[in-house]
Image (tube, rainbow, N blue to C red):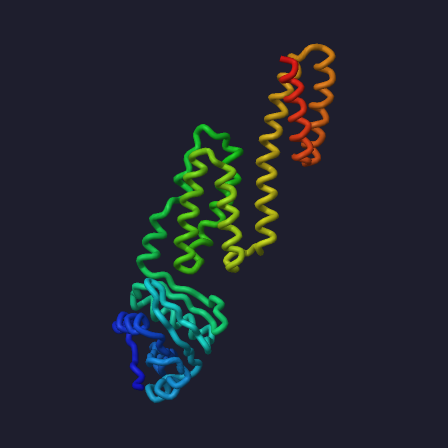
Length: 282
């Protein structure tokens, strides 16, 4: 089979070829440091090394196979020097390729990705953290979530194209949930996004660290809510009859100690009992 050289203007034809069948490719630079890429039907990309050399190609060389499915092209790189992978990505990007590209090793692990122009435009239109508007919700309840969203938003752009779209949609939904006052659901979605980024290695934290930090912030917000609850109960206890007031005051002090110890479950149980006792006095 004949090997065909692909120039920047011919990348569209290359994509069409990959949509028909799995195709071999090889890439390197010529003596003038210009991109040199060849494709050939079939699954023996190493056979393209000789034509590349004849065309003036120099090591290092990158080769593999690719296939196009829908708006995504998967390039499985059997030989992928990092320098050449970056050059190939630059070459495809400069050709204004219309599909997203996933660069994989022969074990299926993601090496890199390139988003299509359409994907980049769509991502830029998604909801932004600046869209959060919660005038009726205490800032102390919303700020921790906003901080986490500000931290993860730029990292979403590093995810492969299809996943980036999903994560941006999730971020947009999170903003909507926050604006609706559904903070617990929003926090759950934030944690899902954080874990996805950590699993991809697009975050400086690993997955365990992300979970622990998320739990700390959740506990902190819960602590604030429990403190407000205790303050409200204290006001009701102050209006209770003498003997009951003394007993319930001791219970409030116990709940306060548990809150200081960050025993949120214990404090919640104690305050549940106080509420039940107050109800029986009515």
